[in-house]
Length: 315
Image 1: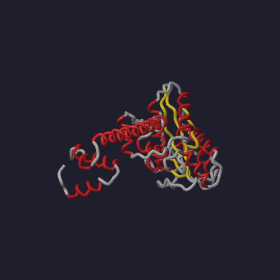
Image 2 (image 1 turned 30 degrees about the vertical axis):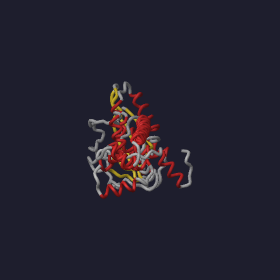
Image 3 (image 1 turned 90 degrees about the vertical axis):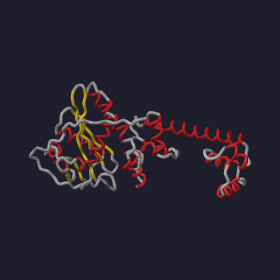
Image 4 (image 1 turned 90 degrees about the horizontal axis):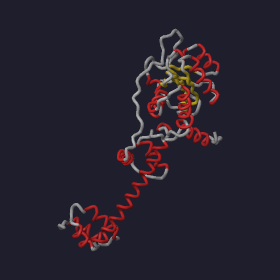
């Protein structure tokens, strides 16, 4: 072990340290100098160093095993949908401090790959109609201060062996909660109006609420607009062909496709309806965390809001 002024001063200081500090120094420099020589110079035994090293490695293995077990549990509970960012946040909630990079490494090591999907397009928006078109009041401002300020609505599709189904959804931007939905084999205005009525039953709209959708004939229809006016809601519509104007509800439909629809084969429409209902009500709204609202679920976010307002948190 060569003599260098810096090493000499450091070595002299280490002689006055606890053995664990000395062993850590030896571990750090074991690729530079012979372990036996360092132990002799620093006044510790080789056996003591190797015993310390084995204990440290055992502790590291135990910590990794506990983290991996927690990762696997969270991954399964998320229905194999969470990637490393969400799992890292869930670990933090459990008191396990670990970097996202480490979580990502462990997930790759154990083959934990979140679900993904590449969805082929199917047209659900018919903007070639003679109904009135309304201005975009939202203008991609997806931030709200409280529930019931802005609802967004959209329609997507579901394949079954009996044929297509269509899912109309209404989301409250505040919590990203899906507050109304309807599934039908027919792409009609009734598909959308039923979802709207269900949203209003769950969350009665207040005067001035913005309802944003695309320019589809279902949303531009006289019946749909009459319901909005009757309840004091203001109509807002995306620009033609611009999905980013309604990004939040588009994101939800992409999520349900990735999490559920791309991995299921439904024999009947009824089977698909039950599956989608259970996903939205029991998983998406209640359990699936959302980065925009602080990695909690929509229902949890609403409960936190009510608690902060001094209201009932049991709903």
